[in-house]
View 1 (cartoon, protein in one colour):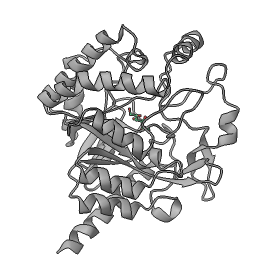
View 2: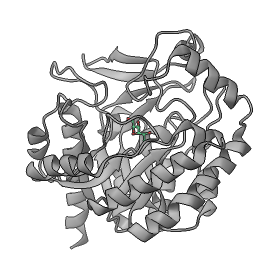
View 3: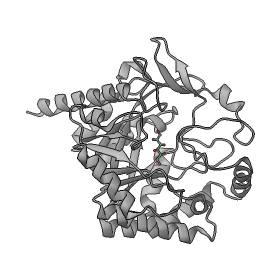
View 4: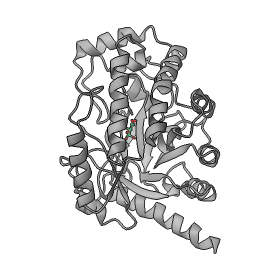
Length: 348
Ligand code: DNO
């Protein structure tokens, strides 16, 4: 297990030098953020970012994300140009030594929450998803914009994309994903870069848009679309675990034994009875996940890939990007490292 930490580059309120001070920290997880989705990243900007990371004493091994242009997900004729750009990005990132690329295939919206600053019992704040709040949200008219969403769309563009998705059901989305994978995985193989799809968060359709990277059955189907080690997963315990139907420990065990998990996002969520959920501290008793059992499954399967502590709460008065403060994620990293060390020692 290689410990890593997401860093949003120079504008991130969390300094990379602080990340370095977390014991056992190995690699940064980052991306180029100032290029529109679908365009090529210049070699110069990739090498500049790599230098910043390496100057801080950390590795530049994982990119999260190279986003997929909506025309690819919609299967429009214009997709070919964006697929060609995507391939070029894989090649250039490989030249810079990148080992894993994370991406997702969620129509329009990345991860979705209904509130970013819910005050928990202990005074910390966390991201939550309450079904009754979601029902009142309308992304076409409302003001909501979440940190993971592409904010470059105008309301008119968004309405236009929604219209186009009216013709894309789950099966069409599967076929567009298959087309994309058959184009890019051979390039990833050639360059020795492992592609790692991030599951849909939450793992079911929202706002009437299809979502398919959601369940064990669908992950099985995904891995078979192109049966190559280079077609792998970012296994996000919080995303897949925010629905009652996924057995997370079993899935981590199964896919890590198959060698198809290249990147782990580990976090805890507290599932509520009506299907709502609250993000919680990493420590197992704080939520519904058994983090020890998850790490044990990885350890048992000799997991050599990357792990990052995922979303943290805001604690100790920290302010910043919701989910991505320093303190609680650093606690998460140490908790995961502690579990791993204990398992290693128990082997001998
Ligand atoms: C949320 C993140 C996601 C993830 C993308 C991958 O915090 O895990 O935004 O980066 O879905 O493409």
